Image (tube, rainbow, N blue to C red; front, top):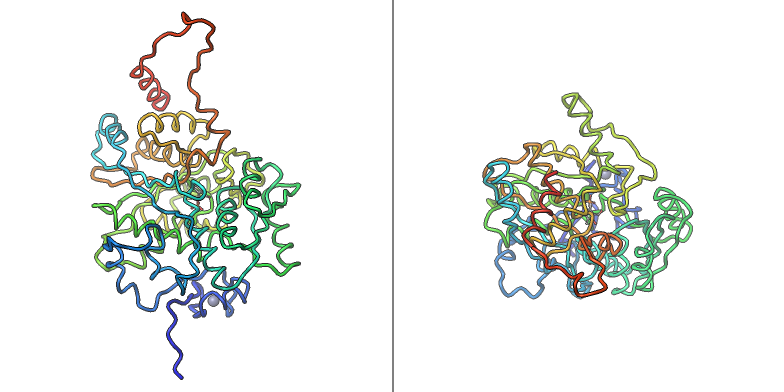
Length: 442
Ligand SMILES: Cc1ncc(COP(=O)(O)O)c(C=O)c1O
Ligand SMILES: [Zn+2]
């Protein structure tokens, strides 16, 4: 009998070996069985034949990423693990457009891809959580191991719980109690390792080998990349113009890898002219990629520039989700950025508080610290002359405030302690607004 064609296969990025769906990929340790590479592209056998229908389907059964089930690496809809994620608005932030016009005489459009209120975790990691839980369920995997400092761990904990899959999460000693609680409250097992993130990763690896449990792959994980790529589908579905600039806070780089995957998949189908320019911003407290980029740029991007980057052990950022001190993806992410005509830069972590206050005032959206780094990346792009007239900028607002209660408490602007009614003066909100903007412009 002729073998039925798979819905999708994985193709090794290094040697083009065809890998039969996820079973073979998992069986070979999430590597190519032929050459051992850890990067593989998911390729759909109908070559994106009817993506356009999905973009226009007004009666789609799923409102989130599963609207794109036909182009996600899952065979049966019964295996979808969803917590209502992905009903993500894309807002126009005209206050930033006005700022660009007034201060830089630039005519641009600015949009916020708002993952701040995602249903499960309040971050854009819901997409990966839902995807991974579904694929694991389809492949009868009942336990999973990860090391995490940030939003990925929480998303996995939440979604795997929904699929009744046990997660063992290894967190470094300096992880916040909020992080521990967010993973633990779903009934998942947290191990707090005496050591830094690297130590937590090593322990997770050993644990997974000892107990023969699948270990979460890193930023090249095709499941994560496939989930993230749906952000591009959503731009096509919801926006009139395709973005010319994509701004994101950068940690390990799965976001831009996902965007690039979608752009490659849809290339030549008439949806857009070019991939957006990637402007990726790191916190100044953990900026190995930005530092490597600055160095390469200074030297005029000499041969093999993308291969050299620093490694920072135990970075001192208080934004755990951006604490990737060993940027293994740099050679790939940096090349993408270069090809796109973009930039990798950094932004001062101390300024995330005024930014978050400003955004809450102007848009009523309360963004978390990693998202504030992305908005900071926007301001930096303006002052560094990286934006031009007619740009359509989309900023990934990757997390809301509920992920960072400690950060939220710092946003209190001015409370007056009072004893008597006479102490209670009136306030001028216009003055307040002026001050918020002054804090940014300084
Ligand atoms: C809110 C937020 N922004 C940005 C990032 C960075 O993501 P990436 O893996 O694409 O660098 C993360 C996660 O690491 C995140 O949670
Ligand atoms: Zn291979």
